[in-house]
Structures are given as C-alpha cells and as structure tokens.
Length: 600
Image (cartoon, one colour):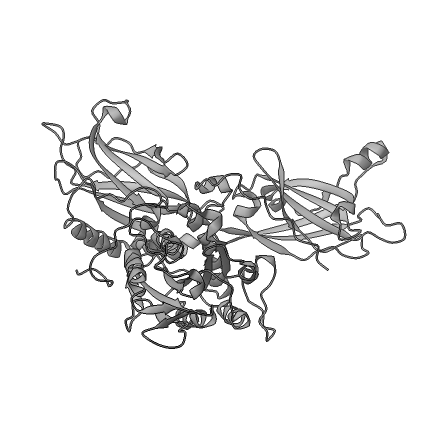
C-alpha cells in the first residue's frame, strides 16, 4: 500500500497580492522586446534619441517598480531596440507593465533627467494573448503625434518545459527488522536557496526486500530543480514500520544533482553518518542506490498560446433565494451603483485576466436557480442576457446583463449544477472533436452561495468533463458551509461518480470568496493558479501538439492591422488602463449601449 501523502505547505503568511510572496511557480520566464513607430522629434535639428524604461506594478506597495530598460538609439524616430527585459509570467495574475518612452537629454542620468515622450500601460496577458504574442499600442503624447509602441514576447525556455523521469532501485540495503528483511521506501528532497530541503516525492514501501525496485515517477523540471540541473537533490531511504512515519528506521542517504545523475550509470552508496561514526573504518555503506533519470522536452503552456490556442470563459451565476432579496442591502445580489457586489467583483477580477486570451471577447453567460419570465418553476440554465444567443461581449457587458437580469426573474431554487455543467460539456465536446485542428480550452466559472442539491448528478457531470478541454472553477459567495463544494475539488482524492466511473483528471478548483474579501487580485490568483497545469495535462493526455507560430508574413499583416486600428484612437493621456486591481468600493458606472461587440 502507498504511504500517506506529504502534508500540504503552510498558507502564505500575509494576504499580499504579489504572487511571488505565495511561492507560486511561474508558468514561464518571458522576455519582452520593443520597437517604436513615428516618435515625435524633440531635438530641434535632429531626430530623437529614444529609450524605454520598463516598470512592473507592485500591488503590495501600490507603485510601479523598475524592472529594466532598453539601450538608447541615436537619431531614430522608429527604433528597434536590442536590449530586452525578462520577467516571470504568472497566468493567474494581471501583471501590469508600464513603458516610459524618453528622448535622452542627459546621458547616464535617470529617467527624471530625460525628455518624456509618453507612457504606455498594458497587462502582460494582453501581449501573451495577442496573435504571435505581439501587441501594438498607441503612445499618448502632448505632441499629438501618431506614435506607437510594438511589444513582442517570447518564452525563455531553459529547463522549464522539461519533464524528468526517475527510476530508482536499491541493492544490499541494511537489514532493519529483527526477524525479517527491511520494508524500504525512498524520499526525494529538493534543496532550497536558504539551505533547507523540501520533500517532493515519497515512493511506496516494498515488503521484506533488501533489493527494492520502486515504481517510476515523473515531475516537471520546475518542481524538481526549477530548471537548474546543478541544484542538489537528496535521496533518503527508510525502513517502514507503521503508518506513523516518525517510527521509520533510517537506512541511508545520498546527494546528487540531475547533471550528476545523468552522467553516471553505476550506483550511489547510501551513507548513514550515525552508523559510520559508530563502526568507524569497518563501515563501508548502508547499501547502493541506483538512480536513472531521463529528461524529456515537452510543449509548454506558452507554446500552445503562441500556436494560437484560445482560452474561452463561460460564466454561470446563482439566482437562488438564499442570496436574499436583491432590493435589500443585506442581499448578496444587492446592486449598489457606487460599488461592486461580490458577484460582479469576481466576474471583473477573473474576466480581466482571461479575456485577453479570447480573440472575439464573447462569453456565454448563464444563470441558474430562478423563475424566469413569469414561469412557475425554476430554470437551472437560462441565458443571462435573455436573448436567443447567450454570448455577451466583454466583462462590462456581462456585468450590465447581470444588473439588468433582475427585471426579468425571481430568485427561487434549489441549487443545481448538473445542467450548467452539461451545457459546458456540450461546448467542450465540440472543442475536443477538433482539438488537433482548432485548439481551444474552456473555463467554466460558477458563482454560488449555497449547498448543491443535485450533488450526485453534479459529480457524474464533472466526471464526464474530466477528459474534455475544460476546467471548472467554483467561487463560494457569502458565508455558507461549503464543505460539499470542497469535495468536488479533487485535491484530497479521486472524484468518483455513483456509477463507479472515476474522473480522469482533477479539473475542479473551489475558492471561497470570504478568504479573499476586498482583495480581487489575490482572489483571481487563487481561482486561476491551477489552469495552466490542467490545460497542459489535457493536451498531453490526448497527444495534442501545439500549432506552429504564425509565419513572418502573417505577423507583418497582423502588426499592420493593429497599427491601422491604433491610428483611429484618440490620443488622450488619460486613455491608459488603470494599473493593478479593482478594489472593493471602487466607483462602478454601468456601461452604456449594446452587449454585443462594438461596431467596427
């Protein structure tokens, strides 16, 4: 039987929205490079000497902080900069970048000593979600010059897209049991920068053997050594005595890096310092450990995005009566014109991160648990916009439809998920059927305040979802008991339908809003942090390879189209999007006009 899993890591010590503080692993290390088009000439008798100062918004301090700068390009109003800027990419964050373009006035001095041309602010996800991972932005400037910044992004791969396969066996291990052989198991630890060791894997134990051959296992290189194959790993071998692992008897250990393991074919001596000290020169070793590793290059999350894979959002909102009368301030659905409620805040926080990865910006949006249009019975899957087509354009369009929906329905019940999930399954099944040709992945966001009534049917629907290109994210609104929701999140064991069918993958993430109240960025991070791994897992299970990146000719056409669109924009210094997150209580102005795409 397998040993119990390692205990989960402790929660973060503070609610900082900077994900590096949460020990989150980046999806990739990326590099941003830049070029400008038609900058204004600030030097009287020559062209400008442009430079870009790049900053990243730090939500902990609520300020932009420098992360790099380009070189100065002399006498050039359309420079292509050689110096790039590298940073970690977190899919679950809205990482705001500010590029400050200057004309060098005082060589060697700081930003404040140069002539300021203009600033461009964008989210990193906007660049990564753009075709060819290239974004064209207008540069607002007081000279009313139609200037543009072109930002390119590419992945610095290193070892981040490798998987390392381990096969470990032992020979002639120390005998620890008085009347029999040992029952050995092996633990693998990764070294940290602070000198500590973190357990990353524990094998099963094998009964009564001194020459064990444990089951092989694999991990992403990022988990094993962060792509640094010279980083030391520690392999400890123990004799199992009971499920209380503190009673295990230590056999021996060995330290080695992936580089050392790759270049060595023979075994490693297991050493017990305690036994060596006791036996002195008579001690040789406590057995031999043979460790075979195999590195395999795998397509990364970024490879799929660069190849044109789209990530589609689908939203479902709970309209059961337990939310409270929406006309009263105590209701979870109360619409305060001056602030977001919990539902709209989640939609805003998650939608702002996901929609840049969807080319048309259309979101199928549903409600469940209400009596709609004068009906006497509950509808568990209705179109939020009350139209024949459930698609709504953009985050503001969803919130507007949500605000308007209370004119057409009555809160009722019960809380049923199965019909909503089945509707998502139908869409994902179409994606699955054409997955190699038209690559897309769906994220179903369910916002709910209560206990599921159709739990068995919901589990059956989720099991059916588990081999489709989709993830399900459930956000618990309010202060209800959400223990039942947590069972749907397969982190603590496999999810099994009443029929006996088992989910092929863990695709459900449950997050209670109350744990992140007033901190939408940290909420969005918790909601989305598992998506890249679930996405890549689906692609690999189904042997789906990413498409090739767009050709140079197609990219030139795309950049020109972006430039043409940008030329129609009004150059207003207030046009840049606000940095960071949307805080609780921020003024909300319902958008005017249609819910569909804006007119061309």
